[in-house]
Length: 244
Image (cartoon, rainbow, N blue to C red; front, side):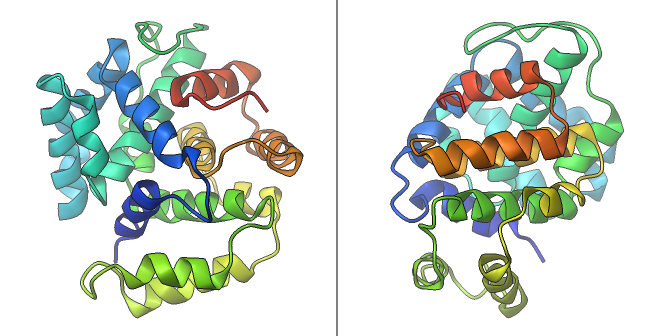
């Protein structure tokens, strides 16, 4: 079971009229294609635990690395599944490394040296658990201003083939939409700082951040995830999202 395919579809189409999702994705891939973020993305492929990844993850990571090596950051946009997780994972690990080094890197700048992500960090952000958390994060963020509903998600999921989304995954999405909005409930299932940064990055890509309910939600989420202000600022700058 892979929730990454649904993530990829949401990133491509946006959720409930959130116009900035694609713009955020473009900003993120452009940032990844420049400076130290590209190095982190390419490093995914050299991690020893790659043998434990799903085929979709390995394929997606290969696609993003190839696009970056070729200088085509926008080419990553079309990647679903592992590609979506590669984008989110790269953002999360870059933010984590930057925080550990006390840096203030932004788009186009080299990520601060030092405290490179560990094998455990990388494994966490490309795992099935990481996919599930990122999908929950996107759905929760889209609910922050009351925009998302089951009809909208049915429209998105209806465009996916049976081999891209299972009945169990559809039920999962329905349950998440129906779940009360509670950033603390989402945060309690996050097991390390890398996943925390990934959940926040997924939330930023899901919404426009142009309403007070959305800004309040992001502030509450950052607090629940125990993200430091530098990491939050890094992710906002790198994705092109307005400050919350």
